[in-house]
Amino acid sequence: MFGEQPDDLWLWVETCKRWQAQDLTAAKAAKADQYVAAVEAFAASNTVILALADELAAGINETLAKSDLELGVQTLADALARQANPFPDAPPGCRSATR
Image (tube, rainbow, N blue to C red; front, side, top):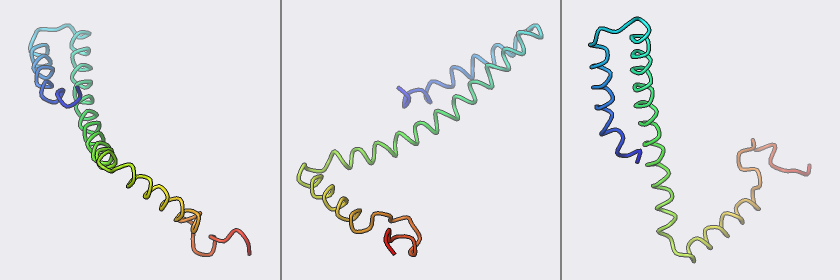
């Protein structure tokens, strides 16, 4: 659905232009301006949403492409790596819980 929306945004922009071209009262002109701002905000957020969805899909598709054996081995390797270094982001002097 989101992937198709950018193709249809021109319809909303065209609607904005048509409304703004009419002889509107001040109140309706303000509403038309709000509509324009909302369409612009939606277009910007839709671009961000689509970019994030593409990033997530790439990672998910990569995971789905692996066999159960590959996933099991990767999970085991990750668990062993965490056990060997439970605080990978800590500064070097702070990694040991006992001193």
